[in-house]
Image (tube, rainbow, N blue to C red):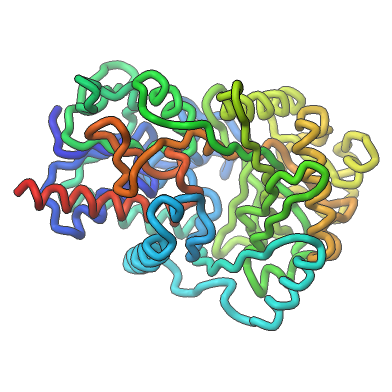
Length: 469
C-alpha cells in the first residue's frame, strides 16, 4: 500500500493532523491506522454488567477513534500553561494562538459553548490566597467540558467528516514497526492479528497516545530515533463528597494546584477533576488495571474525584521510567486481585488497611463499585506516598475537609509520558520522514495540547505539499 501520509493512532493528535490538512486544502492520500475500533463501535461492557471484564484485545475506554481522553472526562484546557511542555518547543504565543484556533474547531463540531472557571474573580482570589499561604500554586485555566457522553458524539462527527473527505481509516490494525531504509522512514508495518501489511508513505506520523508510549520508546531504541527518558507520574485518584469541594467546583470547575512538599520537593499536582463524576477503571497492556475519572454532562454523582500525581525524573544509569511505573501498578493490582484498590485517608494515617465494612459505613460511597478495599501503601513507593500525604494535607488548608479521614484514595493512577522524542519546532525527528506527536511523544498531556500538536503538524505537511507542487 502507498500513501502520501500515514498516521499511526486515531487520538486527538492524529485526528487533527488529518483534519487540518483537509482545512488547508491538501490533496494528499492520507491513511489513519488505529488498533481500536471506530468511535461508534466503542462500548464498555461495564456500563451494563457493573464490572470490568478486561476486554480483549484492547480496552474500549483507552483504545479506538478519539483515543483515551474523550472517554474519560472530556475536558479541553484552554491555557498554554496546562497540557505538557509543547510551549517550550514551539513558543508560548504560538501555543496559545493554536489553542484558540483549535477550540473553534471543537465548537464547529458541537462542543458546549460554556467555558468553566472564568467568572467570580473575588472568589478565585480567595482560593489563590489560601493556596499561597500553604505553599501551593493555583494555575488559572479556562475549561471547556465536553462530557464523556457528548464527546463521543463530537468525535463521531469528526470521524464522518474525515471519511467523507477521502481520509482512509483502517480500524483493528496495530502498528508493528516502522520501515527504515538508509536512515529514512519509508512507512510502517501493520497487522490485524492475522496478516501483516507494509504501508509506504512519504510522511509517517506516530501519534500512539499514552497507550503507545512504551511501544514508541522501544522503537526509538531499536531504530536510533533520538529520545531521552522524561517524567513519569505515579499517584492516586482522590474522591470526596461534592459538599467538601463545592466552592472550587462552582468557581473553577477544576482546581489545578501544584506543590513541592517537603522533604523530597518533588512536583505534585492535581489533575483531571470531575465534579459529580465517577471513578473508573482502564485496562492497559498485560492486563494492567489503572484508575481514572469520568465526568458526564447529564449524569451526576454525589462525589467529586481528581488525580494527585507525583512526578518522578530519573537519572543515569536508570532509563526505564515507564517500566518502573508499570511495576508499581502491577504490584497494586496483585494486592487487589486484579482490581483497583481503595483506602480511606484516615486508615493510611493510622497505618492500617481499609475493610469493606468500613467503606459501607462512611459518608463517601465509592463510585467505582468494584474497587477492592485494602492497603495501597503496601505497593506505593515510600517517596511517592509521603509526597501524596503531605500534598493532601496542604490542599486541606485550601479546601477544608479534603484531608478528612473518610476521603477515599484509589490506586494505581499512572501517567506514562516518559519517552520524550527529540524534535525541532516543525516536529522533525533525526530520522527523515518521521514525526512523533501527542502524549506518546512526551511533549503533550491531554486532549487540547495533543490536538494543537496535530493542527500544527497538519499545517506543516500541507505547506510541504504546496512547495513540492
